[in-house]
Image (cartoon, rainbow, N blue to C red; front, side, top):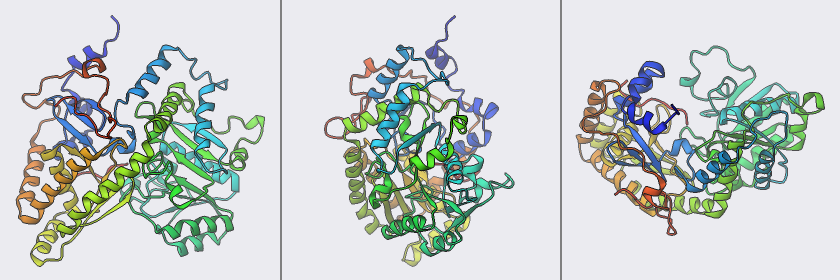
Length: 505
């Protein structure tokens, strides 16, 4: 009997959390149930997720930035269906297929003139692993510098560049020669580079864990120092790249010319994992320096045809739908809409970021009564206030957000780049509602406590009462817009532990 996906989903509906509890990560199950995030999602479309009860959720995480074009984009689906129907000869390995060359050509065209070569792999962490190897080979130097609070992935080499102790603990000694410098501290960077043994400075243009930014003048001086001391500047654009900040690559805001650029996430279109290391001829040829070294660094799935199709379709859609300009506009619209809330609420301190990479900073208020309440909460657990924003945004308003990092009162937004005024207005009204309760009394604390208590009592793997299976509708059922932006930039609605864990992003 042939495999039937719809039958399988129907037969096993509601077993999600039980299966994860038994065979995958039971602590993830526990964490999601504790904060009441245990939903049975059956469909994703545009900026939204839909659960088994037919409820719609505004997704402001977009898979940690993967779904730049929203979920289920029709152009990407059509391209992948076509690729499968063509029976492309995939991963011949002893071959130079056309599609990797075409995608590499498209990426190089969008980069500074010093970038000539591309190495394809499967993820952001793999791009960092390659960048470390390439940098050491090209410079013949041992040390790698990274910024405090950085996040570059969780494989062993990338983990050695991770500023979060919570991710590093228990794994023993990591890659030697990797050392942190304070983010945006030009003198600290200068002191280390002057030792002339640093192969690369690997840095995020905006730090994902907290949405921390350096002043504009830092970047030019950092690049000049790297040039002076013959250290490679490696810019990690895995999350900030591909339009996220209103430029194709974030470093364009400061007119930089990195030696190595890493991209992933959005390049996949949300379908086929892909990563790319973009670099100069000089760096690339230091690794692949002869016929005998043609396979000196490789990965089995790195140039697979479906990933290349997803990347090509993604870049074509960026051009066709003017995605980068829309992201720039939407980022400015978010900033404008959120500014009055910063003025109105003492605990809401700042909105920062670029484009649609947004950090909402919360903190202690000025007035004594509010300060006592805020400090009392923080004594229960550091940065619990930001979690008290995320949980009611989800439960009251069905908006998916995240705390930006462990022990910080920052909520991070990574909306799909197709979001419009409708989504912006809905989020701002919801945040206004939650902040109003936070400033007016203890009701929000009790609501948060009830949610946590109810989550802790929920049994693993059980479907909540009254949640029948709702099979995903086909494109024909839903009409041609597929939940994506119409000509006005709006998305059409076609269907009417005791704390949140620190998560990679």
